[in-house]
Length: 444
Image (cartoon, rainbow, N blue to C red; front, side, top):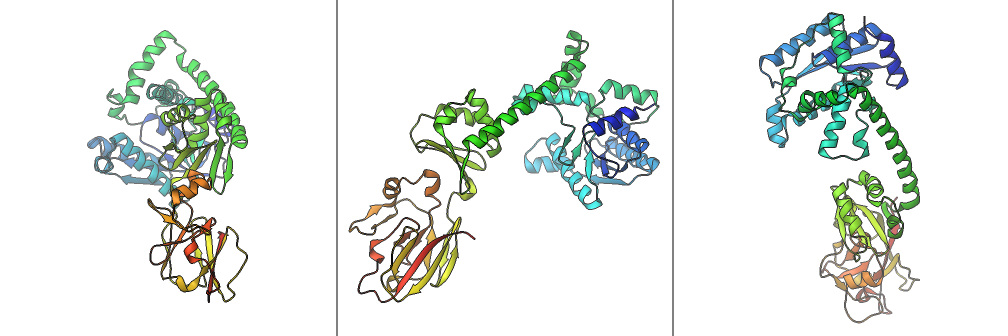
């Protein structure tokens, strides 16, 4: 007899889905996924079956597909199948065969669920899979998030079999005479996960016969600990993160006060893609001079005077923009420049507004970010000044320097450092006949 009450209770307690949902079951043909399919059928849920043929085990792959196709027909549910050239994909993307199979199947599961109107995707991972995952993460190195095992629900993925151990599944399969197919690769110790399952866990069970139950309790404690840490991190983000137009500032003094600093700083910076190693280097460098930078694949952190500044790599530079005429609005990275004509030569100036002698302009004008060697004559001065020195004098944070728009004349001379200073060579005088007004405005 199958454990329908326990199955349904687990689904309800973990809010996995309801009778109103349509579920796509991922079925390999092994005992775990086959038992899941039978439990779904007996419970009356609306579901279909998806099977991936990875073409990795010659005749076995075809045998598995035929078996799952027959299972779906027997249960009277829709069947979806796809064939992958897994080794070719792994070679093309320079990844392992296992990783290739994982990427291919989950991408397809998502695609087929959308195309066929399935609400959720069910996988048949069980308690022992969760234990193997934690041990594997511990072996490779992990943060607290790697210790909670396999979550019952994550996004569209649901795992309704986590209430059962591998031994319980084996007993149910045998007691109910349920047919399944055996994947011979599961018996090979060549894969890290299989090695843990076949060699490590049996040794641990010799030390503690109740190892599975004990470890399940530990996993729950880890999950509770992670929840506490998440709450702490959420509070720290509110206290430490200051958002200035999409750039995050953190007080170095407050960061130094964190305890334990490496753990908390890593959890704060992990959403920006920073590794534990990089955060360790950053922690050691907090007392270094301004300008020291650290990178993830998506963000940069700069030590800038009293702050750590986090900015997106995609927002580092002002893209090149050409201006072919005046009387226009020019969209920029974080702002826009409005340009207009005026016949009256004298106006009240401000940092965000420049009044330029229009007759000195050569089109097209260019808007870009700073470059090595840039120099100009600041308004009111007679000699050149390096842009880099000017920005230092203005105390512009490093994270913002590459985002400042520079308006250049067609001859390459800087006309205006938008929002800061115009060039003295383009100021209006009593001889000016036509004035161009450049105004820096927020993006709409």
